[in-house]
Amino acid sequence: MLPGNSEAALTAYLLRYPQAFWLPLAIATIGNSLGGVVTVWLGRRLPQGQVPKRTDWLARRGAPALLLSWVPLLGDALCLAAGWLRWPWRQVLPWLVLGKFARYLVLAASLRAWWG
Image (cartoon, rainbow, N blue to C red):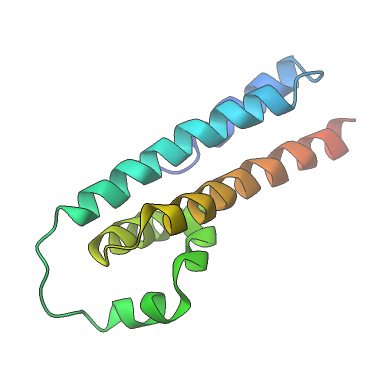
């Protein structure tokens, strides 16, 4: 639940094995994306009711808003809302995975640039 654990693990691994890049990046992305998928699934289990005002912003932007799914705490809320709004999986998955991947790509590329 606390942000930073997967980033710390990925950073430690890439510092230890600098030649590795894509495989640990893929593993971190898959793991974090699965967590987001579970949160979307849980959102689909919530009872439907009156749409809260805070979901208006998300509903207007649609699934591309899930590019922000990597943001700590906010990302979980976005995934939960996407499930509650019953967005189709074919729209949710690509944006959710792309958001998670971008997070780790920026981290890994920054490490590579910093440490050579």
